[in-house]
Image (cartoon, rainbow, N blue to C red; front, side):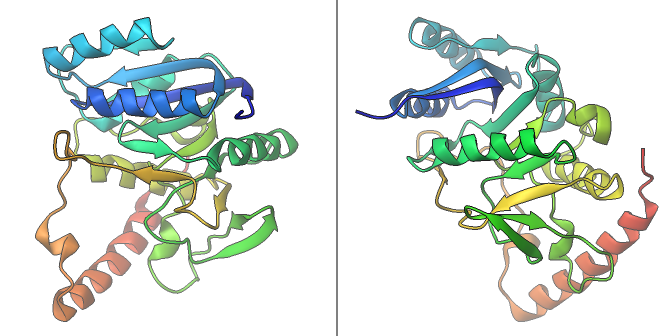
Length: 259
């Protein structure tokens, strides 16, 4: 029998857009892992009527609050209104296309312990496309993320990410609201810079692909597509991309004002 995991003071915040079956899969996996949250908030970004209708049928199987909007306003708005609905001290944020794996619940418990132990800690990250380059081991596979403008490379700037993470529910008060009316990348980028300029502190789980999977099926593919310039492995394009990001990130860091 799977151990029960109770997370007092924690809300599961899920952002959703046109992938109601993926949302059902996510909620089912959390139930199968015997996870119990104080609250579950599903923030929908103006999905098609058939997806909203299907989400509402899920209330017979799962307990959650659905936060709707009449039209699509982008991920920034969707996170903002979802976070506004949270009433617990902590929030674990996740998008609907992720699947929690068996090691995730005990690591989430450990992350909550870190947050309770350290009032200065703003977030704990569980997933990433690449390992953050500047880490100091803490314990149990978690490391402290270190940032200095003097560190080489541009990947040092990626201290914040929209990928699954645990954070204090007053996150928006300290770092500001997500930029709205812009695309996903611009919104995430704005929060990333604010997190750094306001001296955000975070932990990173070293084995960052072991706790969750990101799954996009043929029936519900990703709703976000990156452009060719971002994805190309051409050596000249990659070198140009590196130089551009290095200059852009440093410029925007100094341009961004602390709150």
